[in-house]
Length: 125
Figure (cartoon, helix red, strand yellow):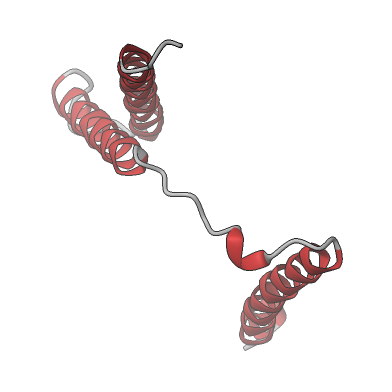
């Protein structure tokens, strides 16, 4: 092994170690800062994201649909011998973005409906 290939076995474990060390260090530092300010770090747990699965599902469905349509276009419209890698990446991005936009619209609609339901059950004084 000569040249830059010799650095790969050194650099990859070093970067992995430093990344893990940095994450743990920042986590501990954040907890210490909360304790110094008189806050209880156990009270601040990760909030659940109820629409997270919907977002990922629609993103993956959109990306898969974009990849499928790019494959169909590449085989039919552009011929078998064409090198159209750009169409794959662009359609994956477009349909993935459409999936995320659909997720946003569904979340917005559900949040508005839930807010409306809560207002219906408010007791007036």
